[in-house]
Image 1: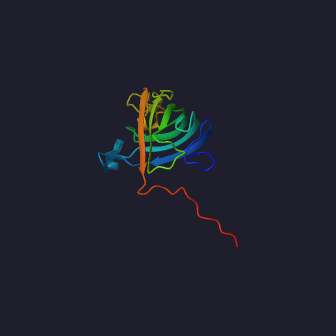
Image 2: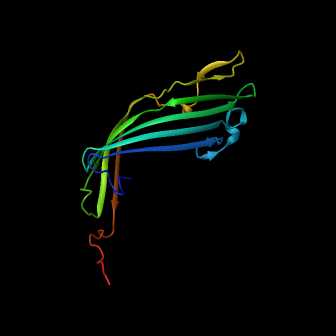
Image 3: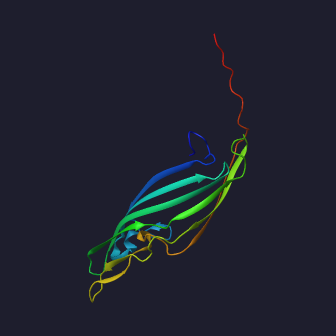
Length: 182
């Protein structure tokens, strides 16, 4: 984290990062116990999700920074339904975008045993929470919302609160070893 091996983002510096996550599961849980047979028609649902996040940070000062996160998700899922056939649905698009501010509690340019930060942010409902798929019905196929795990967003605004802290048992040394020449 940081620019040029700094442990923090220096004033007026930008930083961009792309991260990728992948999940592939066909586990079905009831409470904290895996029970695949309790899934629809005795089969666990199948889900495959790819998540790509673009994070852009800017330091207003050595202690205050802003971070914008823009997620993109692509997923496939499906279940065995009442006709005993596996029905698959797909989704892809922009997720819920967030912007947060971070404040370092101590001056990052000075050595300290205790370091930490607090932050506040907002998450906007930019990702769809109403992606639909085709489902079996005895009277024919019906279109309805797919499961939450594949929806692109959660449909609501969010307030993000966070805190981080670290304590070292001894203060880091500010002296350097003497250079000897021979």
